[in-house]
Image (cartoon, rainbow, N blue to C red; front, side, top):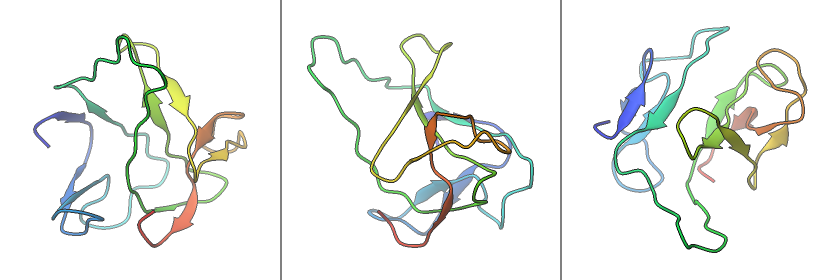
Length: 114
C-alpha cells in the first residue's frame, strides 16, 4: 500500500488474480452501507506524453449492491478533475444511490477474477 493514498479501511488480502495480494476496501468483511471511499495512486504517476492510445489493464472481482452502489476507474491529468473510464465489464450508472447517471462503473456481483 506504499504507493497508494486511501481513506477509511482499505487494505490487502491473500486473494489475488496474480501474485499474493489484492487491494480491497473491506479487508475484514463486508463494506459499510452508504459508504463513500476512494483509493488513489500517488507515487510513480504515469507519463503518457507522446503516447498514442495508451491503455490500462487490470483484473478485478466485486460484490457491489446492484443499482445502488458503484465503483469507478478514473484518471486525472492534474489530480483535481477526474474522468471515469469505461471497460469490458462496466455498466452505465442509473442515477440511483451512489451511481452517477450516464457515467461508467461497476456494480453487481462478479465472483471470478476478470
